[in-house]
Length: 261
Image 1 (tube, rainbow, N blue to C red):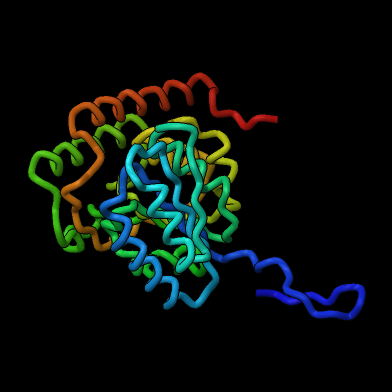
Image 2: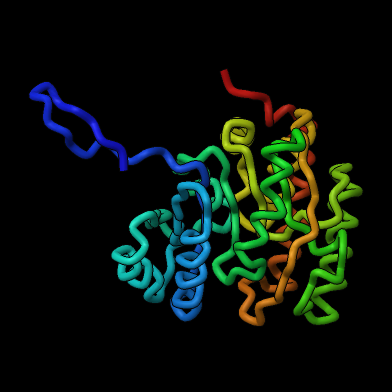
């Protein structure tokens, strides 16, 4: 908390200092997983040598997710609940949270914390010391960091999807879909203003737009533990993701991502 002196010489609390880090967590029907997630967030923030805020973005949940977040606000005063106008998708939720964030850096993470929050310390040096504007977690750079892998079918579909992503977009990354990403907010604010994909392929769109504009992005191996309660339907969502990627490529070729004036 900051202090200010008013016109009568009295010392009064001032507005809270802006956080250095914003953590954005999209959430859809996560009531059963939020308890352990909140405890992990609390422990992580207590060990963090910087001010941080947490933005939980409720994507039109039909369970008790919003109530669980509101109940946790008393013990996590640095947390905020944002609500989407209905179920809009992960990409919409990430964009909503990023837009409302105030931190110098924005950490994107999934509600199940498949990648532990402590892996943030692996990403941070890339954006603070090594000249990158983003550090994205990867399960493919060093497979030994995958402590609990996906099943054979999902794993091989993921490999195929990444090959198609690289073919269509020329992105150099081996894993665009890991949910753990650290972004420089100033560098990525124009990217999110242009982005349009609302569901699971938002990563590809954002990374492609950034890469095309010369924004430096590091791909960093992180610990990852598969959650058996994944919200991604391996067939219908995979088809939608491919459709979205084709749409992104065609939109770019048609000049649909020009900066608005």
